[in-house]
Image (cartoon, rainbow, N blue to C red):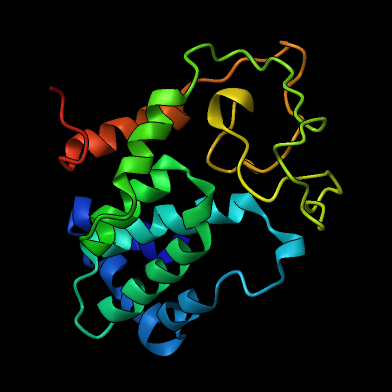
Amino acid sequence: MQILSFLKAAYHVTKDQKFEKAYQTLTQKHHYAENMVQQKMYGPFDMNHSDDELAFLPNYILMRYANDPKLLPVYTKSTQRSWKVEQPERIPIWNIICSAALKKDCDLKVALEELQQIPMDLITWTMENSHRWDLPRDQLNDRFGKAQAVRPIPTPERGISKWNSNTFIYDTGSNGYGEDDGAFFLLPYWMGRYHGFLIEK
C-alpha cells in the first residue's frame, strides 16, 4: 500500500513517467492493488494499531490520485474495510480520511467531538483507569499483554493517545517525563478544515 501511494504521490508532484511505470508494473504484474483488500488478516488478539496508520494514510493518497477505473473500486473496498474495523475507536484522523476518500459522512460528528476533547497539555502524564467499574474489561489483553476495556477510554481521561495507539488501554503515560508534538491533533484538524468538514463559526 505504501509503495503504491508513494509512487502515485511522486508522479502527481513530478509528472515523471518512471514513477507511473513502476506503479503500473506493481499493480498489473504483481497484484499489489488486490493485496490491499487483504491487509490485516489476523485475529483481534494481535491488533497492531500502527498497522492502521500504515493503511489509512496510503489509502488517502490512492483515493485522491489513482483514478484508474479498474483499480479505484479495489481501493474503495480496501478503505471501506479499514473503516469498518476502525470505526468504534473514535480516532478523528480515520473519520476524516474515510469521509474524504469515500465521499460520505464517516462519523464526522464523532471526529469533531474527539478533537474538542483532546487535551492541549501534551505532557505524557500517567493516567490510570484500570480500577474503574464503568469501563468493563475485555476478555482479551492487547498484543503486549496489557489489560484493555471493551470500548475506548474517554479521550480526556486516557492521556496522550496518538493515531497508532490503543485507545482501549486502561493505564498510560510516563509520569510526565515525555511530551508529544501535537501532530495527532493538527493533522486531522487541518485536513478537516481543508476538506470543508470543520467549519469555523
